[in-house]
Length: 284
Image (cartoon, rainbow, N blue to C red; front, side, top):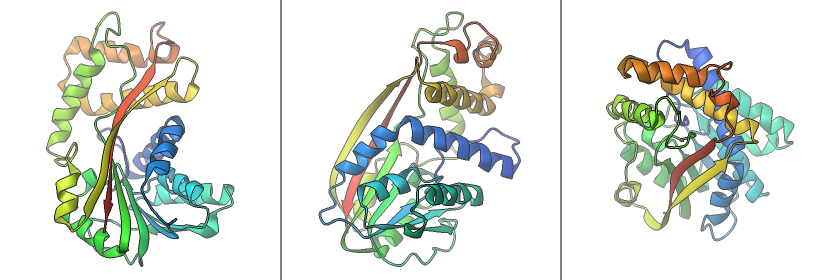
């Protein structure tokens, strides 16, 4: 189980292909939201610059590298259950010349907690809602931090949207209907998605110092990355909702994903990546 994915995989995917596919969309997410992520990291009320950071559910390293950029003296322990994600993270660290500042640890955070040492700053982005017992994980994070250390939880308010509300012309509102089906599909598998983490952090011994919800809108008319992100997101959404969609909506979604279709996603100039993320900053 990987604690870093902003999307769930289509059914029937081979695990290795699934991890590589996830890694690609995590990289797209990091590219499209780079400025937003940098702003979140700048906002963190850290006080003294942290020297030891733990990134839980690090994925391919979006948070890791944003944190290293903000805190040039810091070292990051990056934790994920996916070997493919960690391999990509190591390759990025090498290419960026920071491999001596990154320690990659493969671990399932729902199983035995790895030895992470102590940290001044903890970071978990789109990770907590994947955990089977997040209350336990938060208690362990609390014990990992030094006194006065900060833990930042970043969570999705929902999966990104890309199309105008009245699109496509032959099935207006299709994207919202697809997400509604997807939300029902994931409700049982991800019961903590959309949770208010403030009370859970407090119950684990943290003092929540600040919380904010950030709306993000990245216009994609001229952005190849946003276009690729839209295609991959809708393709993966199709994998999880196809069996429950009305036949007309499934056909309309397939037309959107058809690279040759005149009004398909790859040819549209009206894409905007829209999402919301909430950040909690909690002190030990």
